[in-house]
Length: 441
Image 1 (cartoon, rainbow, N blue to C red):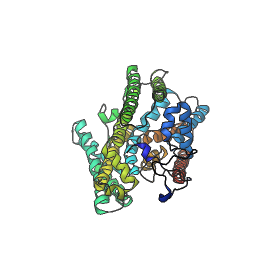
Image 2: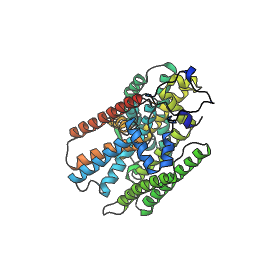
Image 3: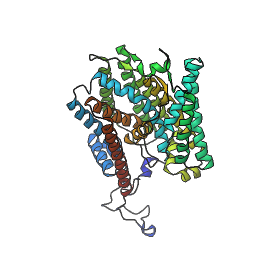
Image 4: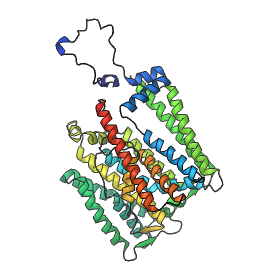
């Protein structure tokens, strides 16, 4: 069925009784207004249509990433006025590097939130992953890559175990992952032994995760150009497929505009990382974070599994009746969360100089969940984007970076981050309520 056939009826329009419905031979009323898919208006009216569509979405509560983007603009302006070095090369690099580990963990949480559940164990799973790597690589002399692989697989196993108890046994995800949070924290402490810390070997892969920079300027600019080309190709391919299926597609003018905006953003970032005095080049951590985002976004939007996750998050019973293996989806999602949690733990260990009892502790869990929610993923399930992890993490890390630069205490940082998180949830709640009123929820 095409998208035209799915256009919802205007809730304010009168319902015509079946017995009075016109037959095929009856002439339509002179003042009848045919239902038109708003996306067709966008295609036919050009930029005027875009404005109309934008207003329709805002009135209907479909805000998308707009609040986050506006928030980032406000943050950049405010802190740049307070400290002229806020948008400097070193500051931008710090935001990119310190966002990577928590951001990768937030990608896994995005999947869990889309499912309509929560994972409270991701911080302790990160700690276990770091502890497993340190014991195998440093204490047992394993090869770097083998130790990293086992650490990440251990996170996958722990996540799958949470999913099993939730999906098969029926224990609420909140309780299962809370138990995991406590249990795996104890396992992490036991693995770390009496000393409680194991330093990363100099030049090791884990040490380089957050300390290696591509000093060659071609790396940053090359990645920027590659990103722009890939983005444009994705839009063109999607437009071609939709036209072939007889569905509304983005016009070429919109594709050009979107590509130009993305090109401007990524090239400016590449310039800041490369050119100014004190710039160190492209951080390896940022490259790996973006790679995780791209793969996860493809899984979420372009695979059958991704569509099943959204379906289960929207209505698990309806998904089950549609033939989706709900238990398998749930177990897989928690396995993904555990995998990315352990991977992110290696980044945190890299920043800390090695594995410690504190990896994944403190406010790590809250920051991971906050990044996903602030970026636009709904706490109510069935709605969200993988790129929410990037946007949310940039917001959080930019706030922390700016407050550090103007000398604010950690207590103030926590309060402001909490206020931003609350604002994101309030916006999400209002958006859902508005969509229900407009008949689009």
